[in-house]
Length: 81
Image 1: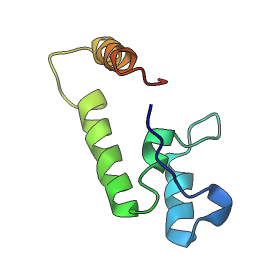
Image 2 (image 1 turned 135 degrees about the horizontal axis):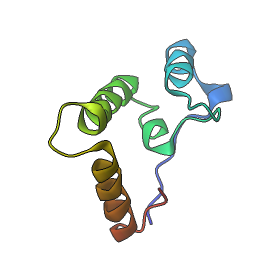
Image 3 (image 1 turned 30 degrees about the vertical axis):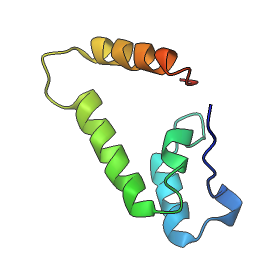
Image 4 (image 1 turned 180 degrees about the horizontal axis):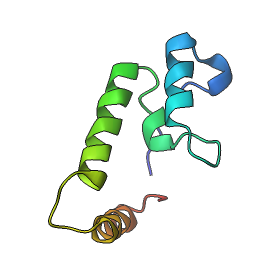
C-alpha cells in the first residue's frame, strides 16, 4: 500500500486547524482520507463535500447499501476502512 504524508495537527496553520476541528469525528480524530489533503486545504473541503453528497444525498440506495459498497471497495483495494 502506498503512503501519503500529511500535516499533523500540531504543525497545522490556522486554516488547516479550523478544517481539522470542523471534520473531527466524535471520537476526536480526523480521517486519514481527509488528512491527505492537508497540503491543499481547498481539496479537503471538496473531498468532504463529495463524500457527503455520495453518502447522504438523495439516492435510490439506502445509507446501509452505500456503506456496504464502500467497505467492499476498500477491502478490494486492501485499504484500512
